[in-house]
Image (tube, helix red, strand yellow):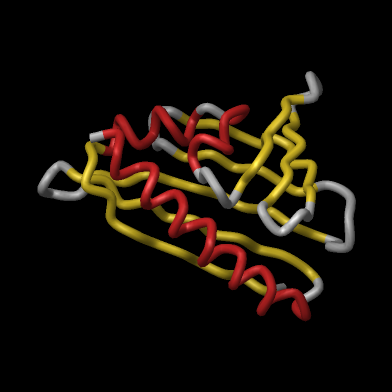
Length: 132
């Protein structure tokens, strides 16, 4: 199983960053430009359209405010397994550290997913810097 990790600092308090991440139905606000549309489907899932035109149905697995960690899975599509977590940690200076981990199969998608995560992380960093 392939596993990818993206991590970046945000010049905003961890609690404010978490408030944005925790809004599962507003990932288009978390990663504007990278995610162009997000619709909740009433079954604990969101349907997302990305800037490259691809779509995904993401099922909410867990949202833990105490650890500021959100877990979701992509269901359906070309991947046989996709599980991801995003967590916001507090840094000693009061800023937040965003940690995004994705585990998936088949491994052949690693290059594509890594590239998409780079674009997503850049979009998130830019949006989250504004919540300070």
